[in-house]
Image 1 (tube, protein in one colour):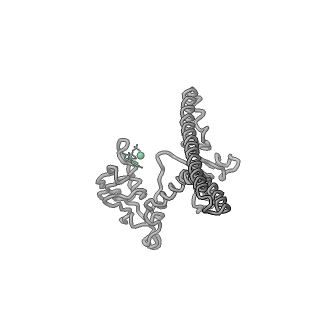
Image 2 (tube, rainbow, N blue to C red):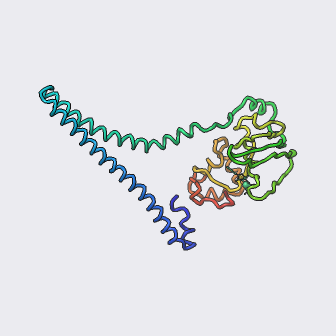
Image 3 (cartoon, rainbow, N blue to C red):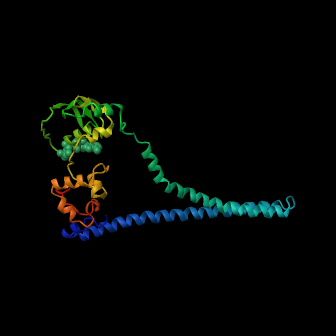
Amino acid sequence: MVLNGLVTIRAYRKIDYFNVNCMVENEKSANVTFTYMIANRWIGVRFDMAVVLITGIAASLCMASRGYIEANMLTFSLQNLTDVVIHFSVSIRMIAELNNFMTASQRIIGYTELDLEDELVKQLDTKLTENQEWPGKGGIKFENVTMSYRDTLEPSVRNLDFEVQPGMKVGIVGRTGAGKSSILQILFRLVDPLEGKCLIDGIDISTIGLHLLRKKIAYIPQSPFLIQGTIRENLDPFEEKTDTEVWEILKQVKLDEHISAMKEGLLSKCSESNNLFSMGQK
Ligand SMILES: Nc1ncnc2c1ncn2[C@@H]1O[C@H](COP(=O)(O)OP(=O)(O)OP(=O)(O)O)[C@@H](O)[C@H]1O
Ligand SMILES: [Mg+2]
């Protein structure tokens, strides 16, 4: 991943620029590490001083109480004191380190507290798929939809009201950032509208399970991307189709020769960084 883009850097002769940038970033990292180590030593020295002080006071008290307490008891308490004091400084350092390392767990706990998506499967799903194949016609209707990505943000789609008749081919035109992709996000329920509703063939999409809804809509994204895994996993992530069916589709889009020429065929590993496919092929 680090070497991704190296060719571009060389082609534009930006080696020096990135060299300097790399050094600057390296220095920042070294600064942080150095500060961390210095702080660690600083607290170490302070603890040792505290240890000396406590042991000194305890030893003086022992001297003062000579005659009142038995000698073996005094030795015993002094011996234990040294142990306790050493463990004290070690445990404080450990607690600080634990705090540091636990940031990762804190993040994960934070993720578990995020709002969940709506139910993946709902009661209506079986009825829709059993009696009639939904969506049979493919009519889309937006009724006064307002959507905002976050509560704190201005709405990206405001009072949108339109209807697409079944079988119609529609293009949405608008300047960049107008909210065209946001309409698709609403259709897939990646973000739910604040107001209004969206109907597909007369069914409010918020009453359908997310799995059914998302499986029934096909979408070609603005910028193609591949998930980390084999070509087959990219084409059929739920392993619902047979190899023959997958090859049949590849033949139709004229990619069968390209993929069969690869050493591992459908099982070739692909990701964003290795260039198995051109933009168009993706
Ligand atoms: N994930 C997001 N979180 C917050 N705001 C977003 C998010 N995605 C888009 N927006 C905002 O919503 C508005 C609409 O964006 P959208 O991506 O729908 O535009 P678009 O019409 O598809 O533009 P383009 O033609 O460039 O693809 C923009 O102001 C954008 O900043
Ligand atoms: Mg867009």
